[in-house]
Length: 268
View 1 (cartoon, one colour):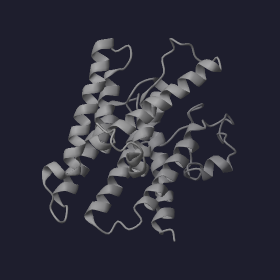
View 2 (view 1 turned 90 degrees about the vertical axis):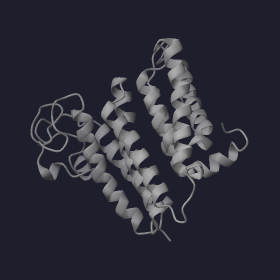
View 3 (view 1 turned 120 degrees about the vertical axis):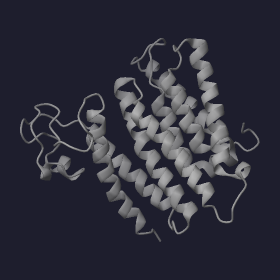
View 4 (view 1 turned 60 degrees about the vertical axis):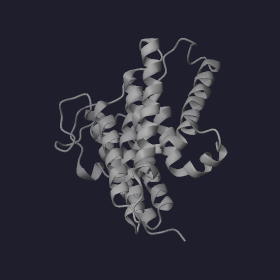
């Protein structure tokens, strides 16, 4: 039986996804994320409240602005629906958050989904990792792990805690990527990728670091090869890597136990 938490988080995810669209639209501007009316990307017309209902308004308007009739970017409903589905999956994964540990686990997942969605979309669009979203992901993960350790019942030793696993995983991941950045002089990777790797290591811990990185590099290689085969990219073309790192973290959050068993004995 599916918990009522699942549909509830789906609708919350739609609202969060709508807010993240605002964040993505205003990242490179001086506008506040929390004040000011939303506007059409094409004509700048103010969007009425009934034209700003997540997903519903896009369908009702048939994907066009009411004022100018130009198409609304598919990014808006795609982000809203993706976040809603991921929030619902979080509710399914944590069906009864009746303990501090499970509640913090759900909180960690929801926060990471939001921040990594911004990283995913912005790097895909601009080939740039937003510092604000990256900083939020790191602070959010550290805070969640620290609180989980402090309120764990029964108490566990620091070296046996998720916080310790995350700190080791973050240090190793950051060190690996910083090495790539340093020796390639930022031609292979940028410092944003190194800081994102830190967030990745904190979130999944050292035990799941190898399978998560394998998933990120493997999926990146597949997409790159497919792009070259289809003639959309050249061998020397730059490709954003943050989306693959972000997607791999989210995948690991839900399927960490399964992939951990697949890589048993091979973890760092």
